[in-house]
Structures are given as structure tokens and as C-alpha cells.
Image (tube, rainbow, N blue to C red; front, side, top):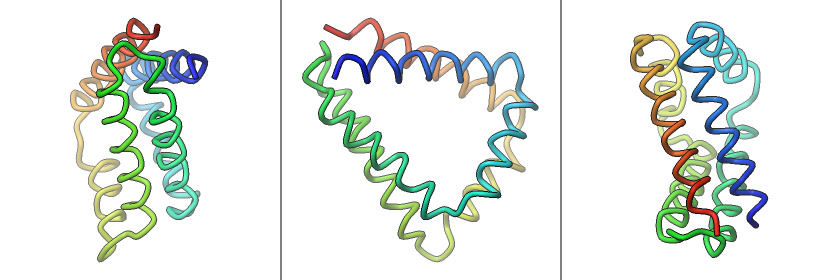
Length: 123
């Protein structure tokens, strides 16, 4: 499962760079994905990635953190699928319309740091 950790690390680093360098374009791409794809379909992505993180934890120097990311992904996928009281719609609307560009750039910095950390922890 090293290949998964390598792939997800590089994806996080590249998405983080896009958030920092091309903030508006990245926001527009995410907005179009969230608005056009049904939330029940979107929920499978974090759930599947969460399960893959759980399996890939043994290929890391810090398996507890990889498992934590996996459990968070599974929880997020289930939360999006269940969508209690339309909370996902409110949360996605807040994320797409209320956050400033600096907050999106901060998410980009966090993604680069997390991707680099996971990349350095692979055995």
C-alpha cells in the first residue's frame, strides 16, 4: 500500500499548490464539482479513501496518524451520505461562498505540509 501513500501525498501537494497559486480557479473547479455531482456519489470518495488509509497505515512510520486520517475519511463519507437536516448543503454553501481567499490559501499550505509529512513517513 505504499503506492497509495505516494499517490495521495503527491495529490495533496499538487492540490495545495493549486490552492495557493490559483485560488479562484481552484474554487471554481470545486464549486462546479460540488454543484453538479450528487452528494451521495461524492460521499463514496472519502469513504473509500478512508478505508485505503486504514490498509496503508502499516506502510508508514506513524501508523496512528494514517489510521486517524482514515477514520476521519470514513466518518466524513458516512456524514455526507446521511446528510442530517441538510447540513451538508449548508456546509458546502459556507465553504464555497463565505470563506476568504486567505482561508483557501491556508488550506493549501496545510495540504502541502500534510502531503510532505505523509511522503516522508513512508517506509
